[in-house]
Length: 270
Ligand SMILES: [Zn+2]
Image (tube, rainbow, N blue to C red):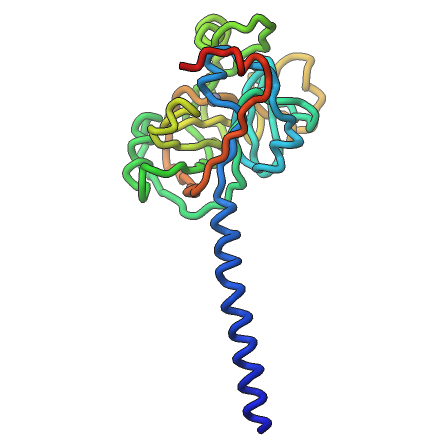
């Protein structure tokens, strides 16, 4: 009789363990979610009004990119810390109450690392990563850490209403930084072609450096900061890569929060 009781308890424990497994896998599946505020199409036509606070965005991800209300620089989120790189090249910490008109984030958890040993241009890097992806039909979060031989990044200055379109801001007033032998992290996504009107199809990276490279430190502002805060970065335009480890995570879900404001409602997004 006693043996029978043990068997029943054993069976019960087994059932409890097995019934718990699908719940766990569902949760881990659900976490592979990309989240964006507004659309890149809206940003392109000058919808720069803030939509969500960074306090809210942090609930949706610890890793990602975007911009700040009024197109006030480039946004980088890494390990839960959010940075704003302005056109003076300085990365400032982003306050929770600040707002974004466009941002894309996820909770990044590395699934696999792609090793790319050769020296290559940014274009060849994209092709090399493409060749190793299991599918081009799903979005990926990508983190590349290391020392980069050369990176060309940019930032954009804060705009005032009535807002000019993004291409005008870029052609007239973006500031470009060329960094050599720079240590840092590229934070980004590779999105499928069918994302085209919602976000940037293909690769999109923003850089945050581990330390400010020599000569890039602006005078006055930030000069007295502790070393760990003196960072720069920006939106990646071009680069040279060598001995690169690209860490990737395939995402299975993508949420879009659409702006609830007049400028989005009135914008021509065709
Ligand atoms: Zn960008």
